[in-house]
Image (tube, rainbow, N blue to C red):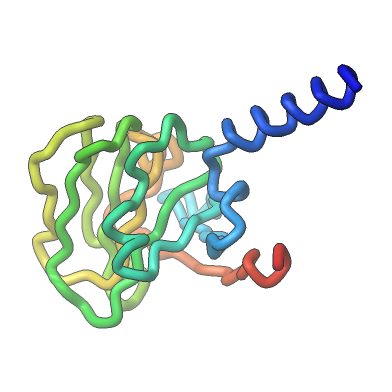
Length: 157
């Protein structure tokens, strides 16, 4: 009985501590490949923020973001994009992309900073990664991405 209780308690703690996109059964996951300045492809898993609620929440209240994960925000038409870091514990970098999946600009953002970061031209996508990921992987303005759509909701239902 005690052994079963310990095992169950450990499993509950493990699930409660998993805050990556993989732990969220209703989350859509895609892979994205960025072509860097060396023409190498840098692949990362992306949690998809598609609904207004998903976009509003973003990466708020997360303790960490694994190095190989990010969040992509989708918009139906090109618009001026604006983001802030309210209730966001993780320092992030954000890329604004146009309808051709090309990075228009990249900004670094500080945790909890409530200053608004806006695109200077209309965009259809925004991608948030750990701060410095773009620079570390030599992904800059003008880089293009390729998206492979995976819908893990279907596999987990």
